[in-house]
Image (cartoon, rainbow, N blue to C red; front, side, top):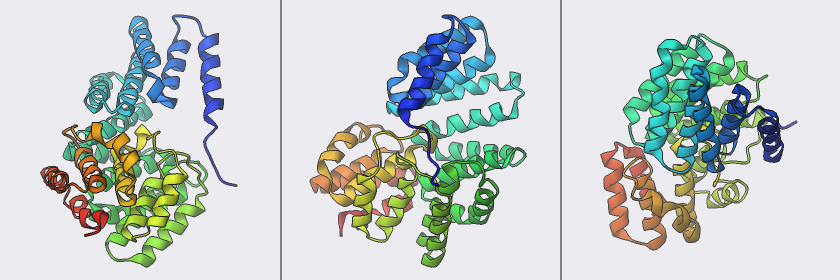
Length: 335
């Protein structure tokens, strides 16, 4: 039996009912609004703002923290990465008053995607390391998240050596967390498969892929597809890339997995020469001055056959310290 998240319509029905049944200025309403914003952040700006205002009026520390997290998620999905980082980082001001260890590491988790998206990779690594250190003292599910976040920052940086160092622990953590359905169980294994393939160990990559399949997790978004796209591109399997693009919903990039999933999507479109889709997604990111800018420039340069854009992409990759990603341009453009 494949494990999957509830249908969007079901969850939206739950949150709508919770909002409808809650009192106008209540804790329950604030929680329901924040949940709505998290579930569908691209349509959740009003819900997140109201949740934040309610938390302030109720002077509820916990609600304020989660409302700010919802505002960060909404801003991230709107590609307003600076705003997302601002809301996420405000939560650290509340840490001295928060004693729940689950809440504490969730604050670290919320900050990592926007910090990475701004190209602040060293800081993102530091936050992920702190999360992982704390998560190892909690439940197996917490540890899977801590490892997943650390692997996702390394994935974004193209630091496959760091990925390989964590592979054994990621396998053990996924096995220990088997009873808890979590996309990070298979996703971390797939990221480790990329690391193995980059190192030239195709057999290990295939073993890790099979372990990910054995988790029997289904994902309608691009969370699991993004490391699979990386593998398919490395194998020069454009038919496999096309199948992944056709069978997922990449317009719903989950905040949880950060900008690495968006970068993989841009590379997939570039590899496929999917000009219409590139022109829809890339131009707004090509002037962001942050992590995704070189990926967007490269996708545009590839589909437009524009050498100047490709040169700008290479310079932007190297300015961010993304040497491995810069090195993938030749394969993507077929030179």
